[in-house]
Image (cartoon, rainbow, N blue to C red; front, side):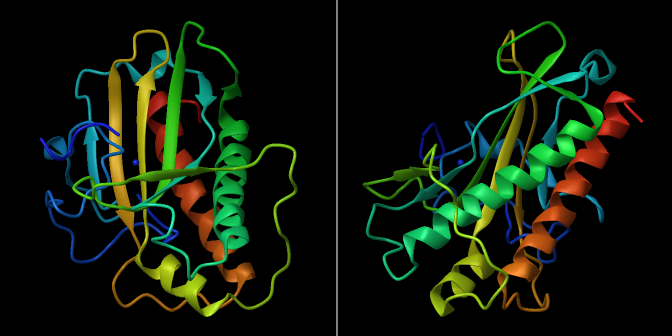
Length: 218
């Protein structure tokens, strides 16, 4: 089955989307185990979403947030995009979500009772491609900074990439929720890093606010 194993998006970044549809077998990345369970989200939700209807959300008050990754179809598929920019996108998304999660949840580094495990990835890959490559942030290296213009290829990548994610019980690995997001059609273009970071902050705020509401943290 094409959509099995091996990473909503974006930065894409920005959440509630137009033109929502079920993902096809030739355009999913393979990050999620099963895309068939996804359904179109509401106006304030991610584009495609699944939630376990029997999940006991209020029992979760801690989060194990895994490092964000970027999935691409082979190492050379994104050669036109400066790798430093890809690493910055990973770092900026992870930082935005981690900061916002910390406002409502206790962040932990191991599975404990009442802990959700959250995985997110920026994706532009297809599970049907013969080679998939996962780019990870480089610990100990400072990500690029600055608010200036985006490289032309970086801007194109941001426009078409996805963010995919899942939430599991950290102890049992039971799937609580999964989703895919993409930038709305017709959205204003993102031309600078400052605009990308603001978009990521808004996306993280919406994600975490919904999670807080379900877990009754606020």
